[in-house]
Image (tube, rainbow over all chains, first blue to last red; front, side, top):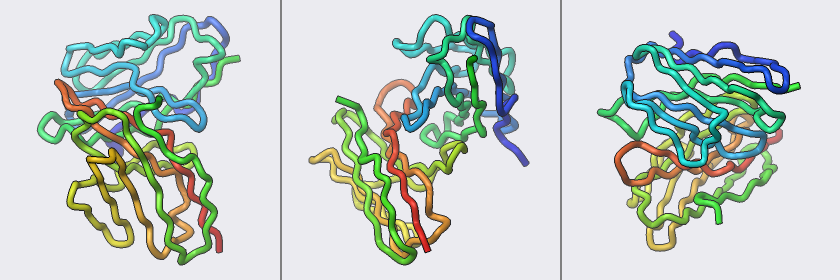
Amino acid sequence: DAMVIQNPRYQVTQFGKPVTLSCSQTLNHNVMYWYQQKSSQAPKLLFHYYDKDFNNEADTPDNFQSRRPNTSFCFLDIRSPGLGDAAMYLCATSNPSYPLEQYFGPGTRLTVT
Amino acid sequence: RKEVEQDPGPFNVPEGATVAFNCTYSNSASQSFFWYRQDCRKEPKLLMSVYSSGNEDGRFTAQLNRASQYISLLIRDSKLSDSATYLCVVNLSGGYNKLIFGAGTRLAVHP
């Protein structure tokens, strides 16, 4: 019954070692988002896809990249993780017909050692 | 100034209490408003939308004051299960659905 799935739920990586987080959805939504949430802070939008159109937030570091090979899947690549990148990474989806409701996945908690 | 500001709390209240959360937003172009609930180490989930006329969903009442750029959430008859962080969220008008989240107000309901 899961609608937005994120894998893995917990990820440990080393400083500077590339890491990829994945998100999949069964909702067939056109729009997929990646948020970063640090402890006791607001979720911060990194980028989103509308279908294959990629939209980067102006303040998202170049260290963060994303891929969306098809409607169902979206990946977040962190090329050289720093200690400051330790956070919860949340994937969300929305349907343009009901654009204001976003469905979140359970998140991936990233630890950088 | 943060785009969406909330009192971080925590609010510690006994079961049955009424508790109110406040939120202010800075962008007068904001079009839509929401309260999300986030349990510890879980994802945010939509609690309710907020309309200018005010709206109620069971024990939860949300109010919006556009002139003051102020949003509130009132929880009546608090339950232990209401313990969570409540995120105030606004949607900016524009070409796509960008939600701006507040950092949240933590609520702890005790027996």
